[in-house]
Amino acid sequence: MGCSAGLISIELARDLLQVHPNSNAVVFSTEIITPNCYQGKERAMLVSNCLFRMGGAAILLTNRRWESRRAKYRLLHVVRTHKGADDKSYRCVTEEEDPEGKDGISLPKDLMAITGEALKSNITTTGPLVLPASEQLLFLLTLIGFKILNLNWKPYIPDFKHFSIHAGGRAVIDELQEKLQLSAEHVEASRMALHRFGNTSSSSLWYELSYIEAKGRTKKGDRIWQIAFGSGFKCNSAVWKCNRNIEPPRDGPWIDCIQRYPVRIPEVVKL
Image 1 (cartoon, rainbow, N blue to C red):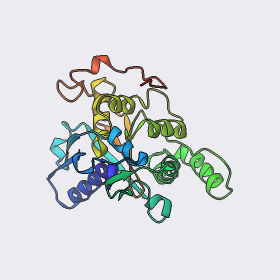
Image 2 (tube, rainbow, N blue to C red):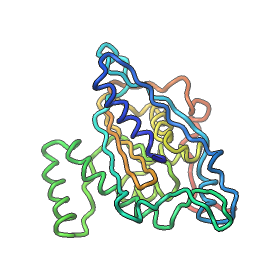
Image 3 (tube, rainbow, N blue to C red):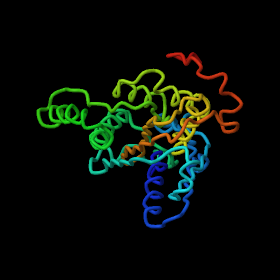
């Protein structure tokens, strides 16, 4: 399931809570890099050693009505897109052996193109779920132009207050910022999480949400769109609604450094 496993687990927990009333569910997302450390010489397989880092986050979900006042967010939608029927997508991000027989994770050069196609498919499904009736017509016209008339139109992007994009790497964040026409503030949480913690795989979304909270930006009624990508190739997204104004936490991964962020990240890093 790769880096998108966190949102797949959220959907599974939601489904379980729908059939088990008055219950809690805990989702634990983590990245353990030791088994996948590559010790060979293939460049495409060495990249993962530079990006991935250890990380973990636990999320508590509940369907108990009396807990609604304490809950930070309400889960609105989970949308999963699987592109495994396409050969290029299926072989994108795979664990394999190099010519010397050493195991590693291979990241192909067309990763960004495949990511873009998966994102378009996911937006096509997510849009009608989150858009008000007044905007659904515009979304439909854009979809017809793109899918049926083959016009080179950009997909209509729903308006969200906050975005939490999987910090898979700088190129991933750049690609999504361009595709979704996002501002620097929209991708700030993703860039800062990548800068501070690296690619923590499925747990990266929760580091980013924690960043937004630590900055005191989550207000009642705000919608948050989480977007994750995984091998196979998958694009999964979740939409949350903030139940109340959330004060900056007194603990958490950002407590010792949030005052230093955001930092300026140069376009070219000299080694």
